[in-house]
Length: 415
Image 1 (cartoon, helix red, strand yellow):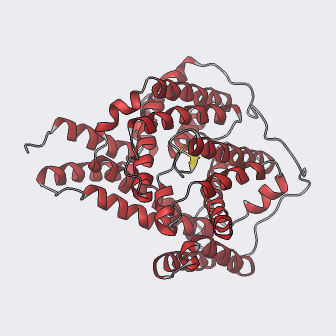
Image 2 (image 1 turned 120 degrees about the vertical axis):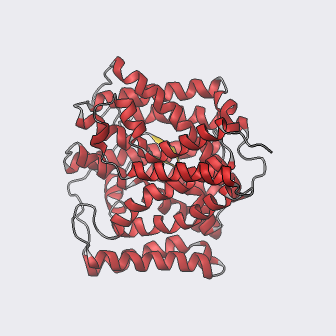
Image 3 (image 1 turned 45 degrees about the vertical axis):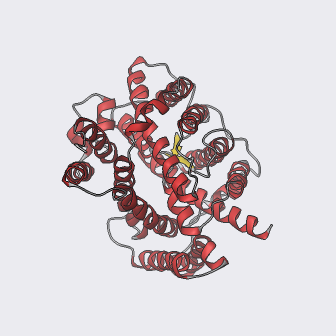
């Protein structure tokens, strides 16, 4: 009982740390005030908890967190720059959900599963760590909202990173299992007196139900249909990669089956619809869950389900949302960065699962160079392209992974 409780708390902290940043980013893009950002954060917590529980119980049935998707942050940002409304974004998320549900129902996901070879999934994991490590490092250095390194923030963040990594690697027993939780708590305690606490909102209602269509009623705009369709196709890679990653980590030899991926894709569609209805940020299964499981050794599903339910329940109490979302950004980013160490190892193991001959080296070399190079290009260079192409071509993770798939299928091995 005590172990289940501690594992539930640690999963809850991880869910929280992974969900708290995106509402702040979107709020700044759309110039939302404090109340609007707080409402978005409340709805995000509710949808993340509900989506994670639905996947674990009815979908792929693995302990994989559903979290705000980076591609949706890109879509939000592009639409803001091109004058798109938040009501259009609700429509886009709902339409994407419908496409994903149809893909799952007609078992299209399982038909494309063979193209996700170890080389493809390894590249996906590696580029994912490259894409997000910069964001986490910025958060650890206090550069989110500032142009100079905040020494106090950075010092505490790197101490937190060392604590989490050290406990998870060298400690034994409960210290090893709960390294992430212990690191975040110690980091938060150090942060409060040295760097100062974060402001907490006043005049909050004790109990509030997450709003439906908080951005306004959805607006049907046919121009978003191709965006929704292309996004749905792209998101299948997230489902497949996450299912394979966590299956490998928990030792599930039957993981990554066609049935499991189809269920996960369908449920991901349901979750996108929920994100549209509750005016949140659409979620995808996060492959970083494999890093968390590998770091903590927590392979049981039910503590994850309990943590998801707690996150849903917390969303109904705005004062609690405000308090727990005050986990300092440098501390949250440091803990997430530590989990990525395991994901890098998973990427290397997948890529080197079979001997790296000249063909494979060339394929991953081209994909890494162009994929990572795309990450450094300013988004403006794609401004002349249609919106759905902007979202595709400006995402180095998708470009690199797509290149591996295409080249590997065209260049068949001679053996």
